[in-house]
Length: 192
Image 1 (cartoon, one colour):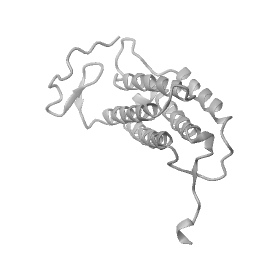
Image 2 (cartoon, one colour):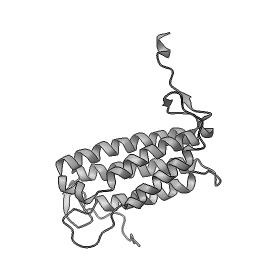
Image 3 (cartoon, rainbow, N blue to C red):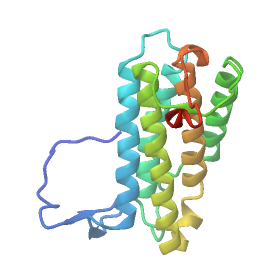
Image 4 (cartoon, rainbow, N blue to C red):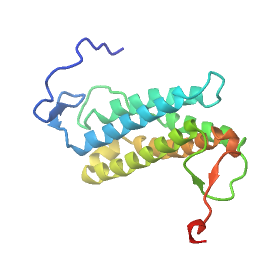
C-alpha cells in the first residue's frame, strides 16, 4: 500500500519530476503527457460516478476502472530499463472491459445514427471521459513512436485505452435510459 506523508516536495519547482524509478525528467516529457491524460480520464470518471445512485449497473465497473487507471499510471511511470518487478497492466484487465461492454450492450436499444454527447448529466460526462480517453490513445501512440522500447514493455496500455473508450460509449448510452434518451445526429439538420 502506498503511504503519502508529504503532499508537497518542491522537487518539481524547476520543471522536472521523478518517474517511479527515481529518474528525473522534464515535465514536458511525452511519458508525462500520457500519464496526465490518464489522470484526466480518472477525474472525469469520478464525475460520472458522483452522478450515479447505488443501484446503477455501471457504477461498480467504473470504480474498478478508476483502480485500473492508477495501475496504468504506475505501469507508465516505470521506465523500460527497470529490472525490479513492477506493476504492469494485464491482459485480464482488457478482457474484463470487453466482458463489461458485451454485458451492457445487450440491454441497449439498436443504434440507427451517431450519438451526440448529451442526454443525462452522467451520460454527458461519460462522453467527456470517452473523448479524453481517445486523446490519451493518440498521445500514447506518439510516445510509442518516439520510444519503441516502451511499446514492447507497456503492452496492454494501448489495448486497454482502446477498450475503455468503447466501454465509455456503451456506458453513455446505458446512462441515457439504455439509449432511449440518446441525442441522435441528424445529418444536414442546419442546412434546412
